[in-house]
Image (tube, rainbow, N blue to C red; front, side, top):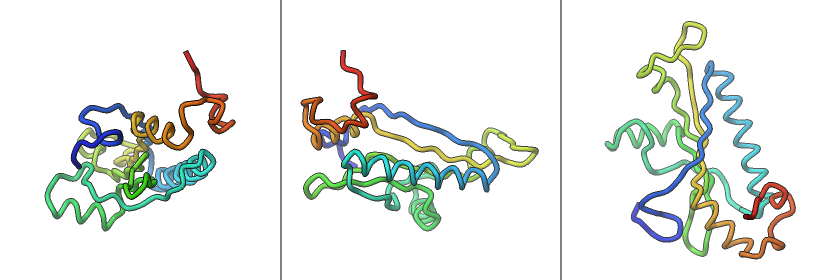
Length: 150
């Protein structure tokens, strides 16, 4: 997409969690994390849902890679609304064996499966401030205990 303040920036920071293991355990952990994210975002007032992403992630930039990623639902984004604009504030990206093949990552002598979940720090910050406001006393109580103010 094009650069557009405050959600699409030229430079940005991400926090990412990567999980590796056998296919069954990786898929279970991916589903578990999706449930936790949906619950947490809802508790914070971020009403949205996971949707199939339209941008390519790791298979390449051609149309075939894009279609394959979408058919296999390899990249799911948690999408919220800000007016008419949709914003992806987190994603869960299934890699299957892609990175294991390239880096020879094994799990009990077989190629490992992997996925990651990622959060755009600036997007979460911008959206949080838009929803909650700048006054910390208006923020959700569950979030306040984790927030540090310097």
